[in-house]
Image 1 (cartoon, rainbow, N blue to C red):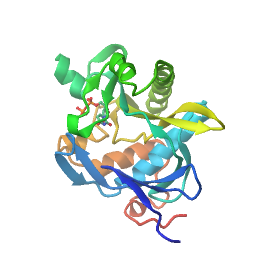
Image 2 (image 1 turned 90 degrees about the vertical axis):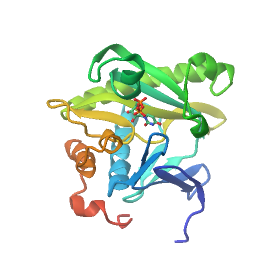
Image 3 (image 1 turned 45 degrees about the horizontal axis):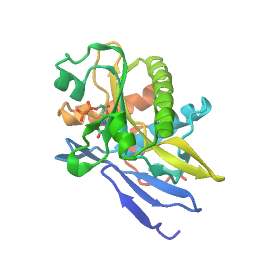
Length: 254
Ligand code: UDP
């Protein structure tokens, strides 16, 4: 098969033209970046694991009627997705203080928040993804008030669902980042979940020991990064059958 046309290369993923109009192929790389790409590295097998973990979580979310861009996984590193118009906002949900909220507001990491908190960041690398309020989002037209209603409603449902799902496998969902897109289908527009959900954009702690099982191991040089991502997949019951050998392989599984 001829190589597909590349449309966009991000820090952790590449988007290719899909086989049919309105579809794209999302390729998961092993590259890792942190602190707005000031820190760069490679986590062997990360792309394979994130592809599988994101497939699993998006499929589970679809089962509770959360609309997503995900269609199906194509192979070890690629998934077929619906082409959407990305809303340029990163939606962060926090259940427990960690990372930037702990620093900014001086809350000790690990403090359970009085309730789940939703924050918005404007997706703009040259501005370092600044935090914004709903006022900025609607005033500058990045999303409309009805889009924001859908986003908040979906985000809170996703948080409740994923919190329970992870707790069931002994993992605390501390915080995570979502991205949404507009999907145009049959003359209608719907806001759908896009991007990925994986240990790259969630904070996941072992429920018993609070050990970090996510990208903070890379950000903070804690080591055993691959092992942590694999352990998340193992607990979710989706580690590829051949085990870690499969993690490094090329796109052989069709
Ligand atoms: N996050 C992300 N991409 C970003 C910024 C944050 O996926 O560009 C995720 C991050 O992995 C964490 C949550 O959003 O699960 C909250 O991140 P925080 O604001 O604490 O930022 P950090 O200090 O991790 O950059």
